[in-house]
Length: 299
Image 1: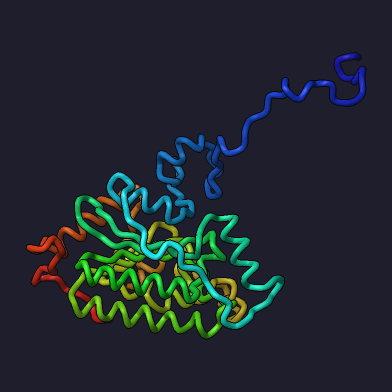
Image 2 (image 1 turned 180 degrees about the horizontal axis):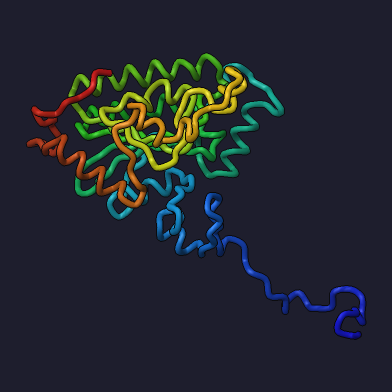
């Protein structure tokens, strides 16, 4: 029958008359497979409207969530990595960083900024997984150290948002040195009794977990975030055993005492403002002073 038989061969529909759905209009949740519009997904702060799965987002989105009216001043925004080891894998390290910068629009794997959140001055450092897996190199450590210095100078609380695969192999020992440098800076922040809140997001692993990510006065995380030192696959191959269900998820880590609480992204700003309101009081010079009853952890 003609209905099931092509009379003329080839595509004859003019290009201008084609009707296709543009890319990026719909979102399919990787967990529950629910399909929703991207507009609705973004309205829900990149969380699934059905199962509340938290998609990975970057510093642009976190700054928009946390800073009042998305107004902030970025610190050290043009700092970029050198090539101290003349490292080459599938391509030279400078070529890799240049290509990543063009692709992501980022200078490195962390952005730091200060502004107001809920009317309270705050300094925030946020990692971007899109930049070489959020790996910790010299620039990451230096920008975090300088952000901590800014928090000390202006007497503002410091929030670190971690999202990283660990130390950057292209910088080897230079990367590992950032663990000591950032930890030492946080010790100075603690001595001055300024609040440090560490938010661990998916994933937070390797040297980042082993240093500044776990040194907060409060360590908090997003639901379902992968948190650990070595990844589950590496651990399973090493010990040759199946791992517990939900191993290294935020919920598993909370149950075993390494987190203070888990916070939904949609409640993050309010919970953060409430927490800081309990920890600090405004000083005469516009900075903050720790309240006497604040129980700060020792770094």
